[in-house]
Length: 189
Image 1 (cartoon, one colour):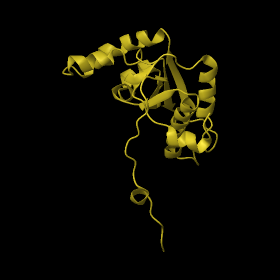
Image 2 (tube, helix red, strand yellow):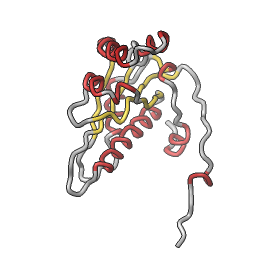
Image 3 (cartoon, one colour):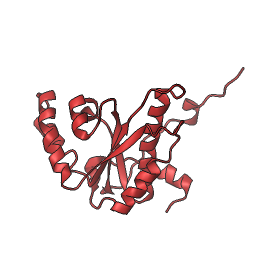
């Protein structure tokens, strides 16, 4: 297992179409979710929850989403539309990270949403630490209310993302990262 800084420095996104079996075991999934829940959570509100999309349920989910996608995007090229019909079946496991904020006298919604984002990032890091790869996705089904409901979002909830998880079939490739000077300034009086 890499040390903490090496883990952070080596995490890369692998596209969901390049993820395959095997996926994490039940014990590994429990560990991944436990790590995902270890994030800053001002007020201990737990402003996020997780939905697992795995096994035979993936085909059922794809079948339920397909007509919604076809109605929403009738002019999409056939090849791209066909990919959508296997969105969840293509990977061994997808974990939905749902943001569930609440009105609070002290803790703004923004902080709660950031906590959900942090949980998604921790989830990706746990996946990487266990030797798998993942991709943080959103897309139409996260933002369309009817599709989000099919995915398990309840009233007042929304998706922070869908984390596709599996064994990489290609080596990770780094992308250009911003230079220190481009993203850091010193505050001066």
